[in-house]
Amino acid sequence: MIVRTRFAPSPTGYLHIGGARTALFNYLLARRLGGRFILRIEDTDQARNIDRADEKLIEDMRWLGLNWDEGPGVGGPAGEYHQSRRLSVYRAHAQRLLDSGKAYYAFDTREELDAMRKAAESAKRRFRYPRAANFPGEADAQRARSEGRPVVVRFRMPDRDFVVNDLLCGEGGVRIAASEVDDFVILKNDGWPTYHFAVVVDDEDMLVTHVLRGQEHLMNTPNHLGLQESLGFRTPVYAHLPVILNMDGSKMSKREKDAAVRSAAKAAIAAATSSEEALRAAAGAAPEAFASWLRGDVQLDAATLDRAAAALGVQPPEIQIHDFRASGYVPSVLLNFIALLGWSPGEDREKMSMEEMCALFSLERVGRTNARFDRAKLLNFNTTALAALDTPTKRGLLRDYLSLHGDSPLATQPDAMLDRLIDMCPGIRVLRDIEIKCRALFAADDGLPIDPAARDKVLLRNERAGLRTLEELTERLAALPEWTAAAIDAQVRSFAEARGLKLGDVAQPVRVAVTGTTVSPPLFESLELLGRERSLARIRGTVRTLRA
RNA sequence: GCCCCCAUCGUCUAGAGGCCUAGGACACCGGCUUUUCAAGCCGAGAACACGGGUUCGAAUCCCGUUGGGGGCGCCA
Image 1: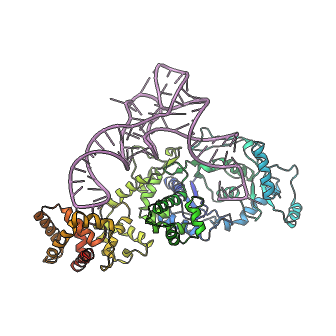
Image 2 (image 1 turned 45 degrees about the horizontal axis):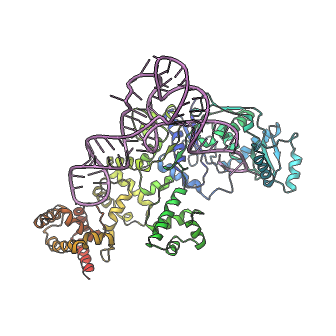
Image 3 (image 1 turned 120 degrees about the vertical axis):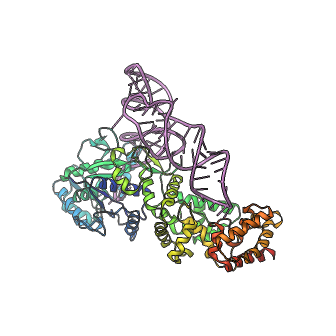
């Protein structure tokens, strides 16, 4: 029997870390066992579907390299892989259950259901839907509809305990008592299937053999077993994966990003480096909404949050796969790291290529404890991996990074220039580091912005020692017979030695004068790249400004 | 509230009753290197949640406690 796995996300936006790991494990299992990996889009909630969200999700999957054998864009035997395009399939199966008395119509309103749930809660009972003694017929459904009552189809759950044979949870299966399950809705009032129903039908249609999914699905598995039994379907092998949490143990979500930006905003306002009004305007938020966000009552939407973060000059923590791409992580490294959140190949192995993971993966070695997402370790993985790549490969990654940052001055540079920048920046942790270090080299020479802290510390402190050094050095540099990193290096060193200065005492003033900051690629190479004219223009400009 | 899952350094984990004085990785701390930021090199500290069993012997098996996570929708 050929192994068939699937990743079945609900398209509510970009792919999350947890979703990516679920996808990865399904992918690895299929690859390891010579099976097929299917992508299916679970878009059965009309209210929640965001326009074209599946495209973002698919983009992230492709970027990660988690390519599917069947699914959107590649097709397959099931024909359609968006549940929204398979409605007739679900309806046919629902009708079958209706006809055989294994499902029935129900006409309760939300209010009635809420009231029943409240009553159960106050009586300290678990709510169970009160199944009618006699099921309503088609005529009753017609009447209910004409009276404007909601009409749903509920599944008549078999009245017995269920045992979920899970590869990861429990030993000898997880037993869930009959009292813990009830007659759940399979067809909503809008005629669309619920998740529980669509997932069972599709896993059967698509011949899925192994279901690896988040542990939050463990308790709904009896619903699926009941449906499979009543529909005469196979039951796939289940493995419910532990959850990935934030470092603080909370559930990983966009909230963390929101909180990070909020605390930066509060700090900036408290330190008077910014005002609430200025930030609000920069973020483009309504005054009341912004105030309520600052109090922590609500979250900001993604775009507003990004603008606020930019205005504050803070880098919010990456949450979604897309965030990591935008920071300049290597996709295979991200996958490698995520795989280790729950899986270990043993023998102290950690750093692995995709091929190695495919060869080594096994469910027996997947753990069962929740993992926290440690960005520091991921950063280390990325740093190490980047250091091992050759320049053309890094350039490819940098191009991808820049495709998301069209406003970067690096975005329009030719390959030869990018290669030069890459070689000037060893030891980078993420691709964004290249941009941070190099962007000043592409700024206009006139009116180069100087960081005040750098200016005070490096040029003005100690009675302008840095500035005086700079002035003395300028003419020596101007007189250099050739403008190469080696020549500049020799000149600066001999100058420093003659004055009894450390190299840094000379190099830092030049760096600040030329780049406006204390951080840049190696100075002499930077000066060579900039050229004599532009370098001297910047130094002289800075000197002029500070003298005035 | 009821039900389910889980429990080794700060974090991810190795560990299938003696190989454990508990191994690796990241982080942290100390040192070296260094024209900035990184990177690199060397070194140190750091864990079997608790309480009962079982056994000659328990991180490993059983029970309980505590703690963490999840579920109880016409969301997925």
